[in-house]
Amino acid sequence: MQTLGIVAVVVIVILSIAAVKTVIPNEEASKPCLLGYKAACSFTPISTVILIIAAVGTFIIAKGVILG
Image (cartoon, rainbow, N blue to C red; front, side):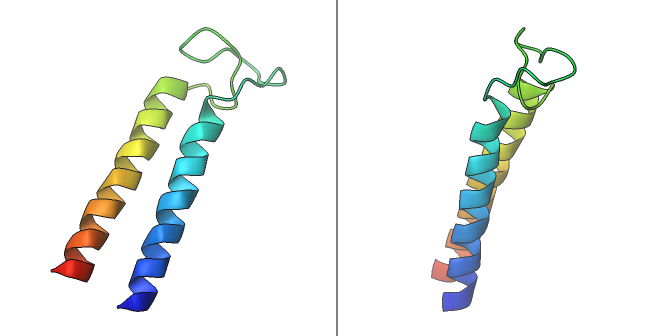
């Protein structure tokens, strides 16, 4: 079970970093994001929310498996 906890933490950290990275401005982007500026991801608000939901979902599932 300890390995599952470490994997869950790594996945949550990766998803969180990816969520933050989507909102960082990037002048080399081909087109502006849905918020109106050139970001690393052109679907910035949508992709950020999806990544945050995935991180929270991973946390909830891992918590239920590890503690339950």
